[in-house]
Length: 193
Ligand SMILES: Cc1cc2nc3c(=O)[nH]c(=O)nc-3n(C[C@H](O)[C@H](O)[C@H](O)COP(=O)(O)O)c2cc1C
Image (tube, rainbow, N blue to C red; front, side, top):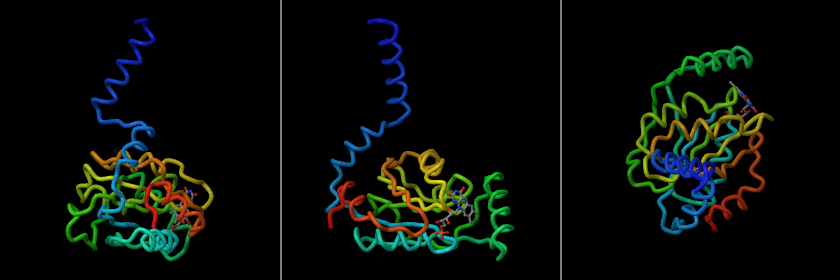
């Protein structure tokens, strides 16, 4: 075994040990998921309505339950001060208290989890949801809405904050409330309905 192969083997072993999965591995697991019988929750946070629209479109196609993440805290009406406050909250790692609750998270196999892209990452409200609910062992499928920046660090950060979850990296990433193409995306994930 040459040095490069040895290094590769060591790196793969460390990744496997830490629970890291490659996109190919996640795709394989997804193929094996029985989407017919899976219990599905569509959970989302939406400030101005776009992510809510996408959540509803997903829910309409996959069924299961839908849940709106709501929290304590308010934002200024004006857009700019609102974004400034949100930026500070993200930088401070603020976790607002949830004011809505999922009755029994343990019953779900698959959680579609929606967040707007805020300053390149997921919102503090979605981070609160991830810290309050044990999603370990579940398949989590992100859906992200944005204002032109695309995915940025949203899926990466959701993956890091979702402890022990199988976060599918084939996320929905759509501009605003765009839902065109959602049916095909869900079919690719194995949700043919
Ligand atoms: C505080 C704040 C920060 C934002 N930051 C970004 C950003 O970094 N990149 C981007 O593409 N869009 C950004 N946007 C736009 C939103 O991601 C986009 O409008 C999203 O669809 C809003 O979802 P909602 O209507 O469900 O709240 C930001 C919006 C707000 C309010």
